[in-house]
Length: 334
Image (tube, rainbow, N blue to C red; front, side, top):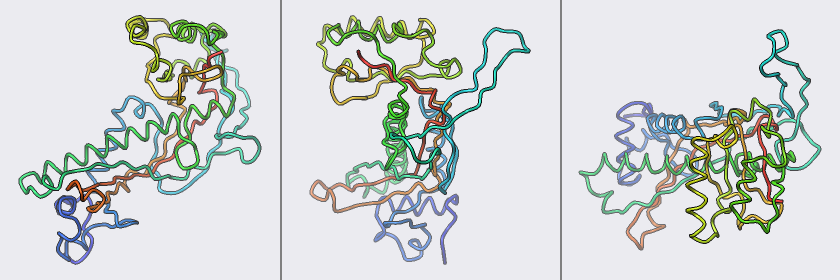
C-alpha cells in the first residue's frame, strides 16, 4: 500500500477497525498512510459509517421529517416571513391567493441581513470503551459495530436537540429559538396558579386562538414539542391523571391533540409566567445541511487511563434553520 485507500474499499475498513482497537501505534507504516487523516489527528470513517448515519437519520422520528441536503461549503438562503396562503374546500379556480413573501432573520435581533448563512458546525459525541475489550482479538468486528452504532446514536440525539434548541451561532438554529426571535407566540390564558393539568389542557384546547393556531399548511405537518419541565417537578400522584388521558388523546384525538409529540427541556425550571409549555414546529419547513461524508473519529488513550479505558470522539458537521417563520409557534404560560 503506497498511498491512501478508497474509504469504500474493504481494505480501508479493515485498517480502520485495527486503528480503533490499537491506535496509530498499532498500525504498520503502510497502513497509517492508507488512512484518511482529518484535522486534529482524526481518522475519517469508512463509507459504510457515513451510509449508516444517513440511514439512521431517515429512520429517526424528527430528522426523518426535515428537509436535508449534503454540502461541504457555506451558502445563504432567504427565510420567508409568511406563507403563500391557500383556501381550503373551494372551487378549483380559487384554490389559492398568491401573496408577496417578505423575509425575516433566522436569529434573534432586528436589522442586518435577510438571509440565513448555512455554515457547517462540528457536532461531536463520545464513547468510552474498556481496553480489555479493545485488546480482545476475537471481539474485533463487534467493537467496530458497537462504536459505529453508539457514536451514531449519540450524534443523532445531539442533532435532534440542536434542531429544537440550537443557539444558531455554534449550533444549528433551533426552531424553538426561531419562534422567540419571530415573536411567534400565544398564551394559554391560564394563570400560573392553575394546576398543571389545566395548563396543559389549555394548550391543546387552543383557548386563546382559533384552530388551527398556525397556517394550515404548517399545522398539518407539525410536531408538538412538550416542555419536559412542565411535568418534571410535579408529585407522583399527578402522573396517573395526566399521562393516560394525554397519551390517549394524542392517539385518538382531534386535529389539535392528534399531532405527533416529543418531549424536550425548553426551560431549565418548571415553566413560570411567559415560559413555553409546548412548541409547535413544521419539520418540513426546516432545512438541515449535513456533511456526513466527513464522519471522523478521534481516539484518546490517556484521558481515562486511570480506569483502563479509551475515549472515542465521533464528529460530523451540520447546520440548519427554519426557512419560514410561520412554521413555528410557542404556546406560553400566562
